[in-house]
Image 1 (cartoon, rainbow, N blue to C red):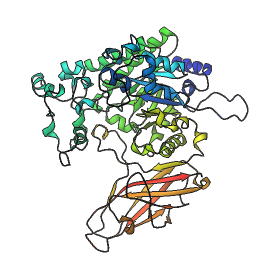
Image 2 (tube, rainbow, N blue to C red; image 1 turned 45 degrees about the vertical axis):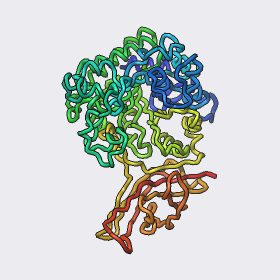
Image 3 (tube, rainbow, N blue to C red; image 1 turned 135 degrees about the horizontal axis):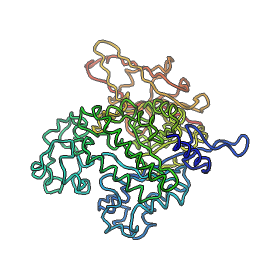
Image 4 (cartoon, rainbow, N blue to C red; image 1 turned 90 degrees about the horizontal axis):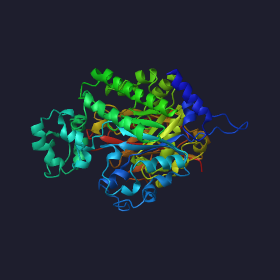
Length: 545
């Protein structure tokens, strides 16, 4: 471990200020400024491309109207997404080269213009534009739980149903499941098991998300890592990616999806997964020595170390043994509240960087929301940022901003009390809970709740601060009183927003750090006091004018 860390430090010393490797010299480290008083360069942003721009064309899954049905040249492929990364703060490209099958095994009919290996143009693009290249591997993609089509089902799964977490006999698999997979039957094989709340008209994926079965709804076609064939398969992908590509690192994506062992057997198999990580580390060490420079190992991990343990990942043990070179903390679905500090402390203790995860969500249609989430992560002490599902770089001016906290400091932002995401079945065992939505009953009298929200800005420097809320019930504001950090607030007034029902007020009572938003709901003057009043969203807008 010491030799590897020494090698990384030596490499970092020779690297330029805008690469990722300087961060790998140690948490918070960066090259010394060239002149006294010069601001420390940051720009440490890894952009994850989920690879559907390549696989979608190759497997004829393209649904976007502006995408081609085939690539006639490399420039056509780069123009879909990658070219828009030029000039942004992105200096690391993580290409998802395995969701179902490795991209070097994709059908070639529609992508042969990309050359003998369709991933090589992405590698070349990264290096031509001073970006490190990471081959990202989804460690148990389960889109096949809800989407039929052989494109979502690998030959390994189709020919070996015993490797799946669901106990399906080969005979039943062929009789019941294969017709749905091949789109010969419209009936989902697990349809009868879905005890969900709804009218029955939802899409299949929504029925699974709302199922009372929780993660089991999605895990039935997931690989069972207790099987050595499964572990050997993923180890083989790592080995082959290192052989094929001039890459800087391997990214293990445990967040897509964190269903690794049969439900209830995750902690039992912690040593099994640890053995796999050691074997992966050995492959990277050997290949790194052969080529004279290391191949880094990074991984996207759940929202906290304890939640990672709960799905079978003993990340702290792997970090302590020196097998992990940097962490990407959290799903990114609750960017304003998940406990990134727990991962940062682990990184500091063992001398590795920790990147904060940002995953696309609807609130990020507001650039101010992306800024707020990124600034909060920088304020907590991350060494860089990692974006997931930011799949149209041209939409995001924030990619020109989020790599430099000093730039973000004076820009308008929005902070949100994170919404709970545990209804999404595949992640509800490994995701930090959100505080909203929140329902109030007032049969016994006034009801109250104290919501918490951290603000990374210095609100006293802002031109204006506005709190906005949205209730599911019309007329709710007439029954509601707010206190911010103990101070009474004006009655909310209707305001515009991305959905109907928003109201808000101006305030100067928001502060840096944790804030208290105490809401009190009064019983109705008339009507049924047992009717629930539900607070859906709360946002804080900070504008510098």
